[in-house]
Length: 147
Image 1: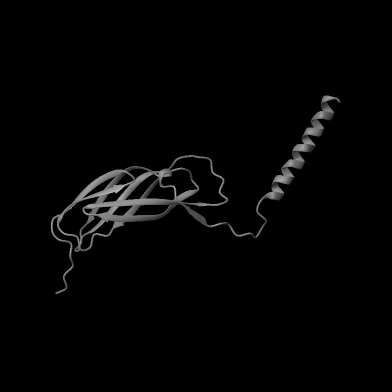
Image 2: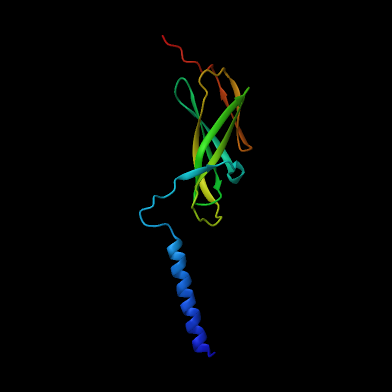
């Protein structure tokens, strides 16, 4: 077989494969899948947190979380927080479209988490988000009293 005939055959084969792959794609009019949560918090890399005490009474406390997600197809789905004594622990979960095809490319994110601090007594509190820790202090009890 000549090299010209071989080239034509390979070109024809690649064209057929391209058409077959295109036919396997999502049909027109099919809705895009919604992101589905994954329970893999270790894929979220938290680099630092900033604790913000808002000037209000009762005081509001927000935690700005900075880090990276595993790819551009991922987003923060939920943040669960629990308090054990004077320590708040926040755990974030990801959501990712089930049909997403993303190369693993760490993507920076910033996410704000409001803490449930209403009713806390004055004192020092620790915040832990995926192992990154910070603290804040309430000078007075954070209890709203109606007059």
